[in-house]
Image (cartoon, rainbow over all chains, first blue to last red; front, side, top):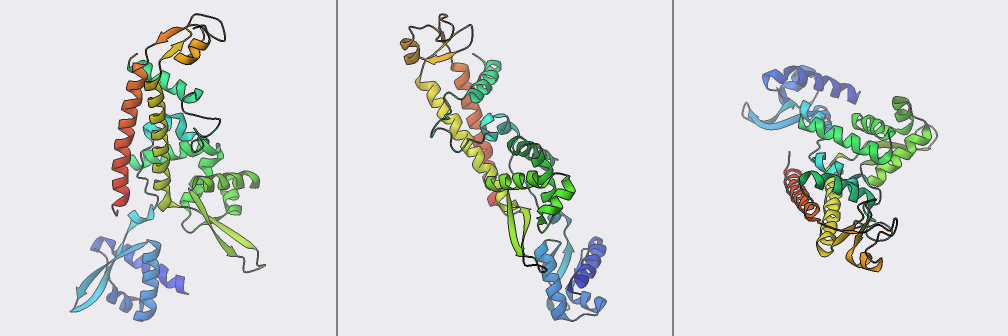
Length: 125
Length: 179
């Protein structure tokens, strides 16, 4: 029942996204639900990251404008560039955090040496 | 565009680290919003139970994946809902990058402190002390060792370290800033 309401709210907010979203207090009259029940569902949607809300003053009262936010859907925002670092064998090495403590070390590691000599040759030497 | 490339690289990294089923499991995890049961991962990827579990544990050890435990309403068994810890993901990758930079620094120091001798025939590489012990002969093939000019190696290490440190600084700023 509760998720049914959420679904309906989400649909309406999505439809009205071109008009800049829906005013929350208007939404209750469209859906015919009371404030208490409705804001619970809205909050749940906001927490899921499906919609966004901004505080506005409408007809002299504080309320929220609900906005569909598709960009939040792609929640995996990778901010780390892996391109050059991935070629270094250490990055994919299982011993990375143990390296230098025991058997493995960065001085004599064959994988690292090969990587360095391959790349340093093209640069100079 | 760039995000897509980063994601592709991440999947490549996972494939290399946990084996080829890693990427497939990661993609299924990334698509699910609120966590997914291992049984459903099996169905979606077509991998067997053992393999899926192995990959999940590896991803968890890396810090990329995490689970939420719930009791099944029917029989009270534990259910594990797996998901990608997206908040931690960037941190983990940066941490790993920093560790790599440290390794490169250690190597650079070693390269700067020592002079090297190599065997032209099989490429065996020894430090001055090691070469002295072997009378400047290759321990494998008895060939004459030749002094190596490692300035190219040092140059390469220095530029790579600088490049990565700049990247890390930028990325840490981006992560700290609310998107």
